[in-house]
Image 1 (cartoon, helix red, strand yellow):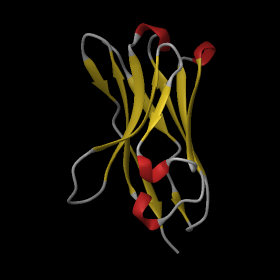
Image 2 (image 1 turned 135 degrees about the vertical axis):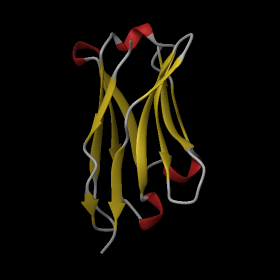
Image 3 (image 1 turned 60 degrees about the vertical axis):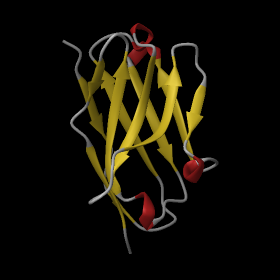
Image 4 (image 1 turned 180 degrees about the vertical axis):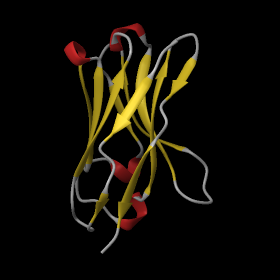
Length: 114
């Protein structure tokens, strides 16, 4: 059973930065892709960023230029560096890993507020 453990969520002021981590129980290369999704209260879960096995990345438009997804294969971990945060980025952030099945982490809360 694949386990994904997120960390790094916090309360941050607008304009601030956070880095989220997602540690997988297996190699990051065993998945077709891994990514970050988020869900704000009363809204649907939405894609934030993904990184494929080959290293290609994709971002939702609203985070392009502010967020960066990366991975450390030696640590079986992916990261989401988030800069210039706004209140609209407030959500629970989930890590996802996908091969023949989809696996989700438990989520980590990011709150952007003054």
